Length: 485
Image 1 (cartoon, rainbow, N blue to C red):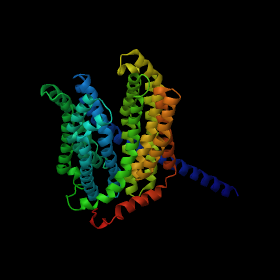
Image 2: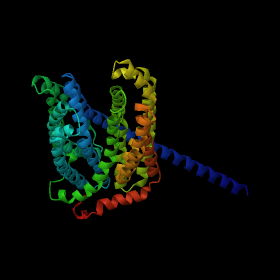
Image 3: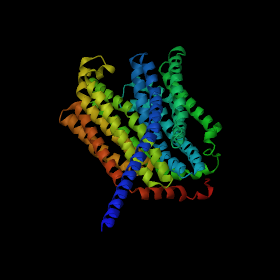
């Protein structure tokens, strides 16, 4: 009897030891994933900020020319983002699904082919956008904008057309490197181009006498130079040898699959982007529109800049999730999701605490007028809430792109912002007379609903089914015979 009890006790101790060992292994795997996401997401944030500051620097140069060049260029850049760059960015995000899963499944040639396919498809999309941009000046006059500002904005956006085609080349190349976790070439080229862009803009704007048009031309030159350098790296680097594919008719065969994911991906990103642009337009018809528009523009500029952090981590988790699903490892995708959420909580805690503690002096970064600074101080808690929502939403959107359920994200954004956020913003801003603060609360109610719905979809995700869908996406489109391991 005593021997049986000893054996039972020994067996229980063994089970406890195994349980503790498994728990240690799970935590070790989790923190290894956190480390991978950090190494991938951190450099991606740098790449995003470097590209974002290209337009900011051009605007800063143009701002020294006077009020008319600045206002017309600001309108042109805003319109180019809404009608062109946001659409291309969204469509290129489809590669995070296709290329990420292809790389995970070791279908390396498909990764290269889909990159070429996306560049060709985005070039096709650029043609009608360019036609709209050519007539943008007349369109602005037609809708009642100031003729002088409209004329200058129209000229500026025409000179941005080369940048549009460069962007259509650059974004797929970035996804090509991102989905392979090849971050170093992107970081080096992005930073080098940013350093080159500063003197280039100065020379074009002031020395060559192109004035505000030099700012537009500088953006195009820098985008093209970045794309050309990355293209040469793909062509000649031995690190890209296994994913480098010859240009062939397979490019055209992959168009259907690309557009099937690119269109909902673009809708998902554009609907959110456009809702915030609409917010600025609504602020222009409030009482004291100069103050309201200035403050909301500061708020929007702040969260747009800080959004680079969760978007970079979101791009990293998109890569990790798509790689793991492509490799048939649903458990790895699940762990990557939890690791990304952990990073999001850590990031938003640091950023919101820092911003809230400095809220009384934060406004002086943008303006010296006491009325503006005081208004921005009042808005600081709402900005902190926006950062919290953006941090979570950025991660969840990345998971959506990694899994390939962008169509669900598109419906969520449509409902959250246009059936909830914008109507509430209009009611609070105009009817409840909360003005700019009401507009911001309204749009953030939409962002809150968006975040909740994305969390629910992610929480109920069947990862085994997502891995099966990835396999079907890779081999079920009639291209299995041309894929090379």
